[in-house]
Image 1 (cartoon, rainbow, N blue to C red):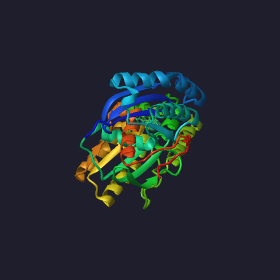
Image 2: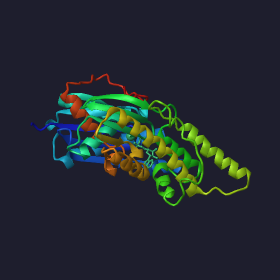
Image 3: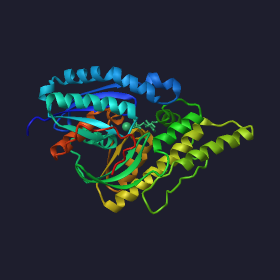
Length: 337
Ligand code: KG4
Ligand code: ZN
């Protein structure tokens, strides 16, 4: 096997990242500059700030990734870049950088769907993991359940009809005035609460499909808080966090198990920021264990947005002959197809 080096570039949200990955799975460098400190005080990512920070950070981050990997631009086989989904300003910064390098080196430019990147973070972390498998992608912007038959090929079983799973964690954290991003805070606080304390709905949980709906759950949380206020009663934040998280986890676990039973796969992978959720991991793992199915998830560094996952997908697409033209544009609302 030759030594194929792919440079990956990621700038779809609030992380500026560049990575060099060898043969799709061996990470030589994965530099991630988080902008979280600039956004936190606004309670969410501010697109205008993100774009400006990406412009500032992009070139130094790429240089650092190349240096850390100990490679030169002339050693690269291709440049892979996220073109969506995400914030258009940030995406354009990464795309411009990738085009410049690809053109200067006369090597292929490969456009990558960010969500597919999250999935491949599992193949980086677990070197013997191979399809077929079921994948649950849960982040701030998407909730997709996929059947992954082989590298480069997948089928969408279901997705959210409204809010993404992570979005609902963030919104609930916001109304409880817990801070941002909400997922990790709720995850931690839920450990101190009782998940059965407050009765919340689990929309679509028993529907005969793989679709999700989280906006009704979020609204139920809001209604509960308003009712408590009207009655002049305190909201027990830990109990509410735990009850919300229990409902969200129940929904996700139920749909994954249904997909496993139908596709008869032996492996399940989690991807996206919500894949870090401790309760989701623990409950899914134990349910799957009963079915003799293995659960995989990426380590924390590969769970958040990073360019190594983009370079990994890029390798498999490059291998299969995919090439992207220089008229590549950002696609903020890109979905998995
Ligand atoms: O994949 P990601 O880093 O960014 C994109 O949305 O693409 O996901 C971020 C989302 C946020 O909504 C965050 O609150 C959520 O993932 N998240 C979590 C946890 N850690 C991050 N949600 C639940 N539990 C967590 N431990
Ligand atoms: Zn992401």
